[in-house]
Amino acid sequence: MYYKTYIITFVLFLNQFIFAQNDIEVLEPAYIKSIKLHARKINAVAPIIRLGEVLQFSFDDLEGDEKEYNYKLTHCTSNWEVSNINTNEFIDGFTEDTFREYENSFNTYQDYTHYELQLPNQNMRIKISGNYIISVLDEDEEVIFTRRFIVYQKKIDVGVSIHKARKISDLNEKQNIELVVNYSNIRINNPSKEIEVALYQNNDWNNVITNLKPQFFRGAQLIYKYDDKTTFFGGNEFLYFDTKDYRSATNNIRRVELKDIYETRLYVDEARTHKSYTYNPDINGGFFIRTINADNPKFEADYTKVHFIYKSDYTISEEEDIYVYGAFNNWQFTDENKLKHTTQNYYETDITLKQGFYNYTYVSLDKNNSINNILEGTHFQTENNYTLLVYYKKFGSKYDEIIGYGVGSSVNLQN
Image (tube, rainbow, N blue to C red; front, side, top):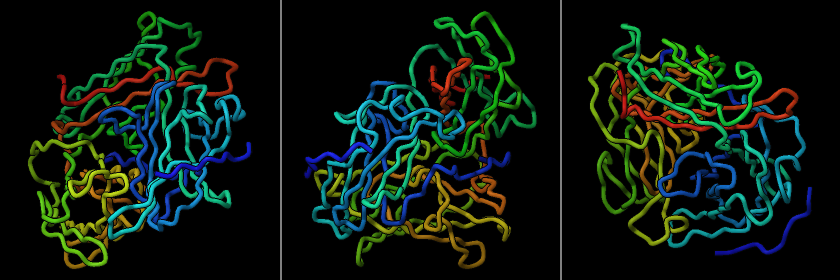
């Protein structure tokens, strides 16, 4: 593994969630793949750390020519706009730094260079909690792509519980989330105005509920117990495939063949819109890189072109596009993961992915950028993870800090 030794100079569902690309977010180009950003913990998948913990960041460049990439951080408000604070107020050390750790692929048909870093490191340390954007820049200081992450402090206690929907019409399709925020450990003068919460399903940045106000105040507790404002459609369990062994087809893979690179053809995915719920353990849309064909998947796992085929059980409107959807590309909508209508009700696309275990599903996006997940059905029994973030901006403060973090799973669904 190579290390650069020099330093640079200081310088949803039927309720139609709206997808909008934030101005400070940049989609990665087609040659950037396998972006991973998560806490450095066993089985960690979410880009969420407690202040002082370590964040692991990595990606592959399929052009494979050892480029010089830099990175910088941006602190954001609770609604992902740039905070009105100076860099030295949230960063100790360099305001911009370079990727010093990289490795060229070894014994693979697809050449690539693997880059990685950890935060904090000897040159950069995060000082405050909040929403953050990490930007990757090229030698010309152009932003190549960005990713969001969360830094929180545990100043308060929070509770997240998942229940069946209260409305009769929603019982079979939705899950209702109840929240409790206990701020008895700190003094908050005006909690109804100084506290904001954000509730995410399955770490999907597009699937979030915000702008919630507490229904009840019980001493130093804020109670969020809505009938409808904190409900999510349960959706369906994610589909999956595993390309850890390119020499043989495993579950859900029809065949594997070698051309310029490996090509993996999945079995046809038939729409589950009107099918009964079937329990199928998943990792809630996530993915992880692995291979049994080599020792170090970081730079020895190969890439394969995965062929997806979706068969709809109804005619898709010409106003909608269908996408393969999951954390493998940060829940984004790009030309690569958009399916093309081939014949009758069949839709297909190819996505180049590194060997590993992948969850995915299918969604549609209409011309108004509204996400519609009706394609795969929705059930109250579906296992989902929920993440609660509690923001605090006291009177006179210039930024939103995150003082509470909680998670819940519908495995423990309550009445």
